Length: 317
Ligand SMILES: O=C(O)CCC(=O)C(=O)O
Image 1 (cartoon, protein in one colour):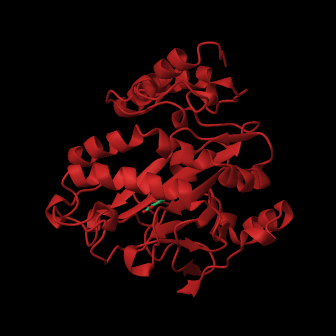
Image 2 (spheres, rainbow, N blue to C red; image 1 turned 180 degrees about the horizontal axis):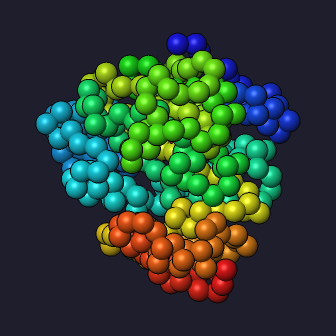
């Protein structure tokens, strides 16, 4: 596989960043995020994983040595329990709001930056097939405006054996590509783009890519858990999918619960203060909740609408 193109923060300006993104569909900025933020977050997460039994009992949590008997992945009830705890950490949500991250995000989308509130943590067990994310485009799930971007960041150095992300360079130019059934994945070998690029991504590096850029994770062949964050952002002047603001599942997740133990501060509900333009709008959502083909989809739209009404009652369209 070809190596990533990369930029160092000293040579960053908004013109070069936008040009790189337009040409290649991604930008890897090296050494951007401060260790003083990454280190404590990694420690908080590994402490949770340790007490949850995901790491070997006689190991130091910060080394992330996996207890292979606990292997699980997104979609497993046991994963969800641990994930919910991590999703509740204020330091996890604070990461994309760091000055350094916001600086580059604004270079791409302008001053009217919307950081999507539901960032994702990836807790990837080694040598566990179901945990490997295959080729896909974020726009398939994130929707809204195509000029939405992902910022992917490992919380520790991530050499190839730990399964960093790989990018299909130039794939953002081919629109939305066909996926296999409901998986959201693009069948291997059918992706459109130039070359797959990849390589080591270190703690402090930020991999930015366009919502139409095809990407996938390499398998984690080490003995350690791989821990990374992916955060999404766009201009709030462009349409945003309401499903990125509220919880869409049938479970009991809510912002009230997530924010329950945080001190009162500006990271709570910051997105409510922005002049958001929803796509689909509330009117379109109620139509979709009535007319979508499957019961499951109708129920999902109805839930989004109900939760939006609760969170953003003043937003009428
Ligand atoms: O971290 C991973 O394994 C997958 C991340 C991903 O697909 C994304 O950020 O969109």
